[in-house]
Amino acid sequence: MNGERRQDKVAIECVRRLLDSGLDFALYRFPGEREPHLVLQTSEEALPLKMQPDVSSTTGTYASFSGDGPSGFIFAPFIETSKTPTLLIRPDVAVSGWELIELETRELAKHRRISLSSIELEDRTEGIEESDAYKVAFRSFKYQLDRENYQKLVLSFSQLKDWEGAGHEDVLFTRAAERFPNSMVYLVYTHRGGRWFGCTPELLLEGYGQKWHTMALAGTRTWEHGEWNDKNVHEQRIVSDYIEGQLQSLGARITRQGPYTSKAGHLFHLRTDYTFHLPKPTAPMRILGMLHPTPALCGLPKMEAWNFIRLFERNKRLYYGGYLGPMNLRAETNIFVNIRCAQIRPGGKALFFAGGGLTRNSIFSEEKDEIKRKMDTLLSALAKDQS
Image (tube, rainbow, N blue to C red; front, side, top):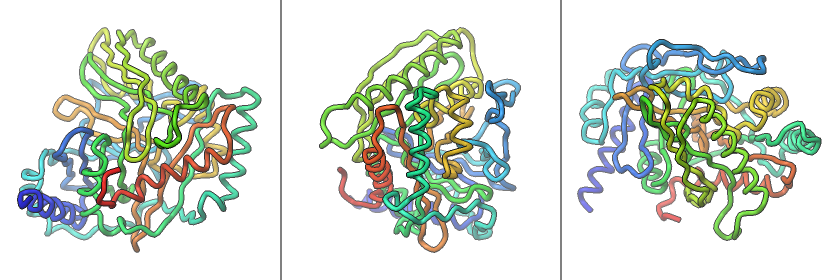
């Protein structure tokens, strides 16, 4: 017990040093692990990259990189803009475990305190029950689905709330790491993107060379809702079919496990795992370009849904729905979809994000309830008990 208390004290002190330093960093802990990892850039700011497709194109054109591409911690938005670029935190320091993180952060007190002046601010404080914008967007999305213009569209929502986690990220990170053992728990700060916290269960891509792993994660319910309904089963099948098609286009040999029920906090999802072997070593950016955004965060057809969301959603996603994680770090890549996340603000506030996949079977009241349940995941991150 004394050892655990000492580790918690060390962890809290390390997080405080990082936040006070003003340096761009990513502190994260993978699902199933106990110790976190740190990528810290000790000079300048995270590098903006052009990684995503041109949203005005129906096919999409991605930036190309030589070799395996850049190395570091990547933090990508749902849609790149001049205010929300894809950012790469350079791995000037890349260590694992609190003991090494503590050693690396001892000298950070000499750096300036952070400035949040460059982040994009969106101050939507109304809840989903009062949100006319969400109601209008739902009708617009459902109209398109009913006329079979799309198989699926994902509608997001954000709300600015008072939150005890904002300003107490030191306790927040350690508590969330205990509470969400099956999620990637992260705390990221960049001067251009601000301070973000999340607990995401959704892997987008991991591996290296020729052997890789991804998943299809869709459908959401709490345990008391019983069996999966047709809407959730259909939604998960859409995501699975898309991923399988993309992997087959790369010539991959695929091993599939699922679908099965996976727990993330107090929520449950339908999940299918894919291990795949490519004909030759492939850079992670090429695979990411094929997978992102998956129908779980966008819809189908992919580029048409991407453009529709950009034009009609009425909610700025910022870095929600993008992806993050170490890329080409120690020869491996571990990228997760950025869901169950919040942009932490000064003054004890945070902008919370959630979204839901809509199909022709979607019902307005059920989608609102799903949004609220997903937001509650982060709101409960400081709770001491494990549900």
